[in-house]
Figure 1: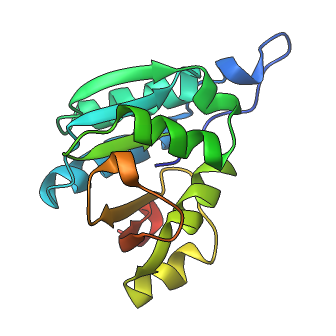
Figure 2 (figure 1 turned 90 degrees about the vertical axis):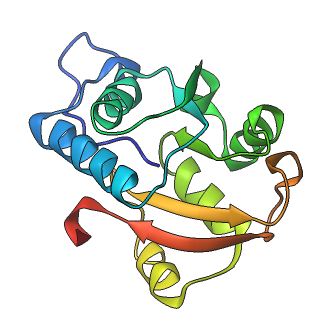
Length: 161
């Protein structure tokens, strides 16, 4: 999942510390509700330590269970390969949610989705907006997740709900 919509940084505020705007918080809450209804409930959540990602998590958590949460500064700066390493190292046999940033989130979803629902693939090919959620299934444990071996089950955005 890409973090929800954030406001522009004010003078003296680092990009890392940008908060969500009102629309972003509403979108995070909406996505949490949709995740609960569709039973996309993670066992573990890996969340960027950036303020907008943590606030996205808070919005989700108000609507659905987010499982055990682990925070990583590296989800702010790593590339898609770094995201995949974190998934392999921290994922178990269950489900996992990553709340990160673009372009890494989009790059990761594209790289691991070797196949998928045609409509979901078409939507994701048009970009990965804030609060976008790619639901990717893997046949085995997340420790063996690799480029091209996932199945894109769904791609959800607040605008499409």
